[in-house]
Image (cartoon, rainbow, N blue to C red; front, top):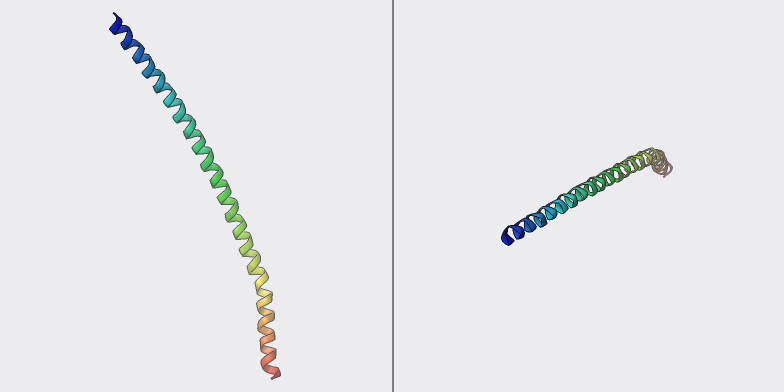
Length: 79
């Protein structure tokens, strides 16, 4: 009888540990999903900022290049 009682206690302890492990795994999975979502959002924001800066640089560079090429041409014509 005592052996059976010990076996039942061990089985209950094992079941509790399994339950805790499953709960911890579920919590970890939720946090991992949240973290991946935040990383994805941040990455998308960074990509959008980079695209915006590239566009700004492209639009800002064109007049400068025109000016520089024009001044270089003038230098050669004046000399």
